[in-house]
Length: 234
Figure 1: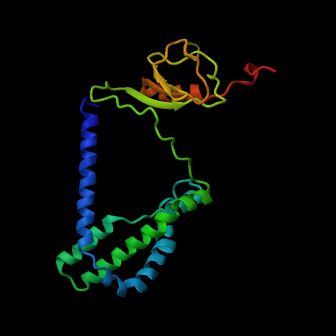
Figure 2 (figure 1 turned 120 degrees about the horizontal axis):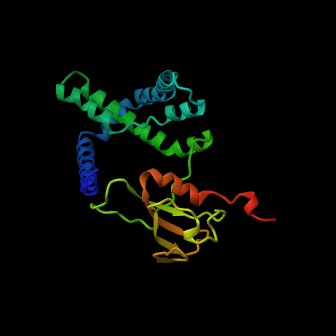
Figure 3 (figure 1 turned 135 degrees about the horizontal axis):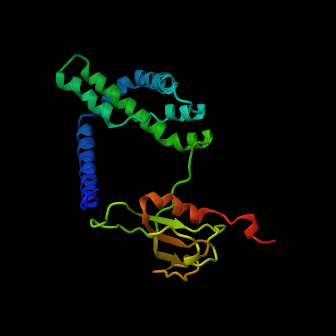
């Protein structure tokens, strides 16, 4: 961890996106849609073989040493989304000038398009059908960067207080936060403010919490835990 980590990460992410734009632009200039028509038949057959035979067999054999559920293996088999890497590799025969290099390139490009259309559009449906999908994380509402001067070991987490949480109706000072943990901002009813120890938490409150990284899970468990039966009253 170092003080310029955040700025360097943002810089490298920008460079990565720029390089992807350049790469796809370059690859697009190598493709002629009219040249894909002769490989449609063989491309469809090869796509079906790769999607429904080659990849599932490979995945099941590779994952056989691990005890994974069948539905998990099926999901891994299905998400073999092919991207720019195969297209880049297919340019090597073009550069080497080997026979049928253009046919190889067009065939690989067609396979990538087929995979993107089939896998890219069906992954959410397949995941729900297999029961391996998770709900999308809530879009951050109180996003805040710690900045480049953030000390090592701190973690800024955003939480929403569930309606049935045991902290509902309690003051912050009474909920038992770990030492060194601070609720630095609350959004309640559309208003944002810095809380104090006597602030009463309500269901649906959005919190921005500063804590130590090892305590992050403990802090989350405090807010998501429900009251015990003996504390709920008759």
